[in-house]
Length: 358
Ligand code: NAI
Image (cartoon, rainbow, N blue to C red):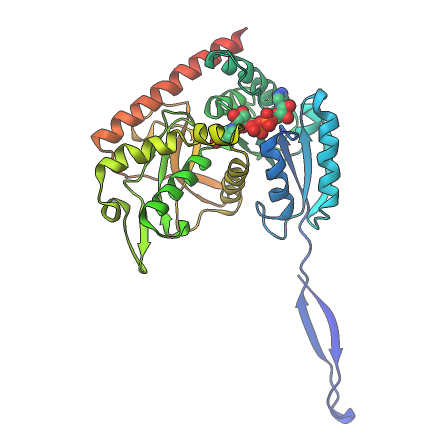
């Protein structure tokens, strides 16, 4: 589409003819509705700015934010709304704070499901799972009713993989491929550990994979990763040249990084979790470039993993659709690690389904 923006008459009057200057009309994009749950919590506090500033959906995409939290948090949420207004962000066209999931999910194109019950002292893993699975069952039902059918859903609240599975089960009108769980924080941690080990900028390491569950059974795998050193790309395994480190210290450091942050900060990772959520959704909307992303997606049994659990795989993304990277070699060590995390996901799934029957 174009429109005439002006005419020139710079020739002598006798030969005067209009030179029409035509410039494309760039129509501003329609705002998309984006929901963040747990909007009064600490991850949301960093995430909302990233979304509203254009870091996720691009610098030309206006957003209308829907903020969901529970009723007792509405006062705190009001403060967050004030701060968003005070940021004077050009891409933010509106904000809707609410404690009603159906209002929050109405017509959303993207959903960051961050809100979940935190683990309290003396709480067993199973109790936490039970409490949170109920939240994600209810939110699945609400999404099914009122969200756009092409909504892209990222579950951050733990246990993220199983919450995503349950959410999808209760939203049958939305494709299963549209429900994902966040393992990008683990990927970013792994990439950063390798960059530090090799003394290179973090951007020069790519294709580290997180397999499986976002839990201590996850498998951070550097066996297909590449690093650029002195302008030349080479396998991380060759550059590190320490198989024992890659199978032990590297793996456990990434697996236990969340606990290390809690021990130091007395609160769980929030800034880095928000950054990872932004990275995940940005890649999903705008596509991966020369590197893979790890995300929890519905398993089709690739690489001998259990089907129908939300399992983290390496993916490439184009046109808003993810695709599992195929043809990677799975070593005996990797096989054991994949089997262990797959087994945990099957157990979590069973526990969650038992809770949902009540
Ligand atoms: P937070 O406790 O600061 O905030 C959580 C918010 O969720 C609170 O405002 C709470 O009121 C709200 N909430 C609780 N139930 C809700 C419901 N039914 N609907 C809407 N909101 C609800 O917690 P934070 O630090 O923001 O973490 C949120 C979640 O993210 C936790 O489950 C945490 O374990 C998880 N997490 C996941 C990571 C990942 O890599 N997948 C990384 C870091 C945290």
